[in-house]
Image 1: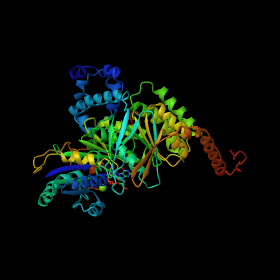
Image 2: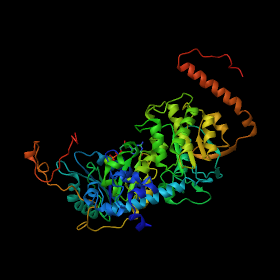
Image 3: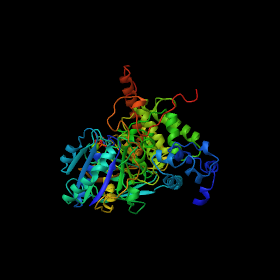
Length: 337
Length: 231
Ligand SMILES: Nc1nc2c(ncn2[C@@H]2O[C@H](COP(=O)(O)OP(=O)(O)O)[C@@H](O)[C@H]2O)c(=O)[nH]1
Ligand SMILES: [Mg+2]
């Protein structure tokens, strides 16, 4: 294949794999300008000195080109790839006592992690993020689809497995919402970029409550809008099958819809929370005590029955918070339920 | 003794990830020394010392930092060998995007952070392009999408390298870097070894201490930009 591609013209290659433009651009080469040349001719035009100037050599450039093709193909295949389950095997709590049982986390299910601040909720999320293999302070180990993950899968998969969302995360790119989403979609090798960008934008606006335009720079979104965009983007565009959420209750997004969105996109969702509404929207909850998993509670039918009224209360409190913030009088009329 | 070169833009997290990786190596019973190469000043010595990591600093001052690195790396190796270290890790700031301290057959690590912006990988040059391992830090404070885009951009300029995500603050991921570092083979001397990339072809008047501006002041290789273009 290598020889065939080397003898093809850049134009032909571009037609076959438009994304190779990304590789060329990192050497400041515009493929349109050298469209008639064969790949193997680039050693003479732009020439060896040109590659030298760009911090490489012609041969390294060509080798890199073929590796880039391999990587992108892997990336495309990954889009169809997903994990069905994670199993957390017991480690030890802060007293050195072994946790009593293992926990299974399944695709399309939400698991809440509850417990006092400082009890070890974030530690559990970190163990899952690094797919611990008895080599973290807790000694837990995590199986992926029933087997131990390889080191490559644990540390080097460029976030293909696990996505994270926490209060500490902010957008740093200097781009509008639309350009930002487009850039992400391009790097994910999505075919219908316009379509997916529109979908994420619409979804984020539903989750955010306060609408925002596509032209807004991502760095200027409010806390709630940022979180909403992050959630919609992760659900609809990230290849990760596992989503770890660290306390988003005060983020100003529609919490229940956010979880539903992630679940309907077949993610394994873990959420560390103090919020009763979020905890009861989950399918099960892990109780953390003193650094260890102490209980696993399935959400009961009775609890689920009350979800709706819980949601009502939550909406009411959000409304009152907004009224307070904007200096209005707080409407107490329908407070008694 | 095994040698590893770590380079990356200022504040990308080099010292943080080296400290974490050395801790992992120490836990496995290895001894590790660090040499920090910098231009004007370096505060890293205190940090390494706080973690009881033996460290030496070399400041290039008025000299080309990468040339300075090459002149001093053999001495650094001697120091490490005298101390019977299993590993010597060098940290250099990579201030000049044109150069890189990476040496053929010596494990080369480039550290770059998620905050530096998606266009940074393209700007960095050989230090990133020719690295065996690219460590990406500060993933804890940017969005998932930005992490994915950033990693893709690194791939674009260095499809060969292995990408490892490390949180420089908690050390998450350094365990894996330590594993890779452990796999490198040892070097006795660097005499005759080759840099992965040529330094600029210049012996210039400014290298020799010139400060005045003007075309009559220039010697050596130089190049003129056409700012006015075609107009
Ligand atoms: N949030 C966060 N901060 C980091 C991370 N890695 C490094 N830092 C911080 O970035 C700053 C610069 O790190 P340092 O290791 O000194 O960078 P160096 O100049 O490349 O050696 C320090 O304040 C670190 O604590 C990371 O992964 N996440
Ligand atoms: Mg440093």
